[in-house]
Image 1 (cartoon, helix red, strand yellow):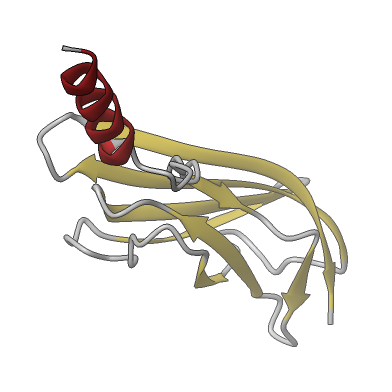
Image 2 (cartoon, one colour):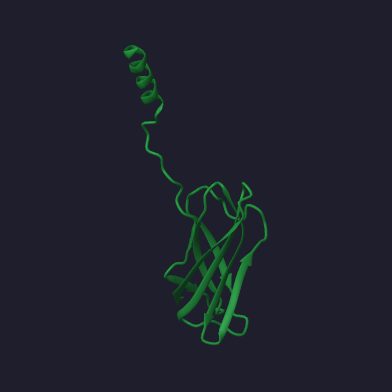
Length: 136
């Protein structure tokens, strides 16, 4: 009986994984501290997005406001708009002021990314807000 108990204990320990389980990195959108002010007053901002392989990015948007000047850029809804593999991806945006050109200096920015769960678990919205410095 003691032999059987020892064998069962060894088999149980052998079946337990010795590797450390790693949780998927949290999904996120991150705005930079600086953006590019183009000669025509439009703005280029590169945001970073990370989502895991159980998600699918289907829409993103970015809104800029500087005093009374505002504008946005967006893409979607399109399935697989951003690669979701747990690694950081870059999204290039180009924003033209809807009511005039942007100027060098600070601009308030909001970025949103819509994610769907590929297993039917519902949608998630990622958000980041930042004051971004515009320079030529």
